[in-house]
Image 1 (cartoon, rainbow, N blue to C red):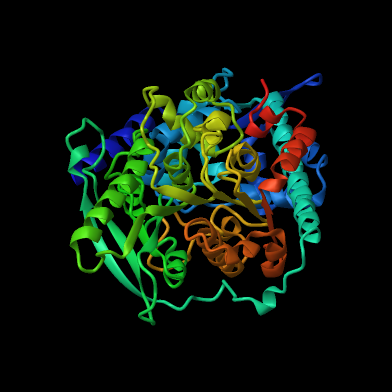
Image 2: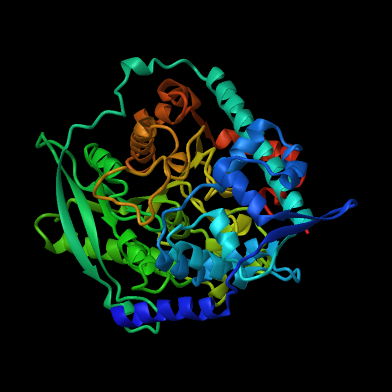
Length: 565
């Protein structure tokens, strides 16, 4: 297997190298209507990037930017990305990677003004394989065309649209903060300082078990995936008092792409300390270990069928827990499997929404993905559903009674039609600075589409896609995440997730209404800590937020973050 993979990779490198000129692109050309054709010599750009010097010819362009803009541009262009050529090759030859490079090739074209897809892919791999590493200048040097044609009109238009969308996002975030403040002002005052602090651990001790499950029913199907064998960590509460009532409600945590069952240990342990049985499966094929294998060249990329298999992992887990509750002394009579909650992050958020009743909107999938012109990065992953056969997949599980989804992706997969099918209580968690599953199209707008009478939106200012994820050394990242994408110190976000998950599931799984005051804008204000300020609103604000989106975007379809033709 190793020889085959390495041989395949070297074959790619060799074939590209043979067809690549000794010199790469020596200039970048573009048309700036109505003024005509312009070009920038690669050597002038390289001089600016490496030494900060501005040649006479480059000064024509540099003088049109202020010093701060030039400094920022130079800092970005000189950035070196520490990635292996095998990783770059694996990613750019995967369906998602190909789609992203195709999109980039619309902007960076060949000298004949054709999509630069093949040239870009070869330049990226060769640059990563060179001693200088993956840098902008190195990509130019290895671009197999005498020049790069910058599609300036589309680039400027798309950048302008993105800038406008980001400004509107900031306006929406600010307005929702105002809605939360108004909602809090209209509530009867509650002294949360005198109430139990849900950010602190509960009164139960915890015993942890690891189960290995093997769903044989899926081994026989003609799927391009590994056998469906996976580990599950189960956190079982151990009461300090013999009077504790049984059985315990069960909560399952579904991790995201390239994460694992250690990614949310802090939430699992916290909920177990409050008397919930928490089960955390490690989804095969999309976990961090398998993703590392894929990026190293030893495994295939995840297939579209994972959108079906991940929810089936949870359904099979619940079936096995039911069996264990009847036969295994560790679990016997301790599990209430008719009152199940789900927590999911990112792709795990989709998994939770689907299990709660969300259905595929194949009409929207076909429309958005053919072609994909979205400025929303998560659409590249959602468009994998384009490879699924349109069908009424039986994913919903009636044992699921409440879900908490953090940074979920769903806008194209489920759409308004699919989201409106969800009837159970939902808590939607969004980060204002999430660039992978952007808050407006993936959480805020879907919040307004939910039919549930009990729904909540927890919006965290300055939080990123990774702010809710544990920084545990037992959960290494498949790809190192730069600090800028991690965002500010995440400890306050952990405290939000711990407190809100306890309040949400105590209220909507265990029907303990004394926890409902914690699900209010007032409590959000009470625990909020700058710079990661928390705004918490409930279903009463759904229509107000819907009207807000209508005002800001004029047409709600624009929250899809789609570039105009």
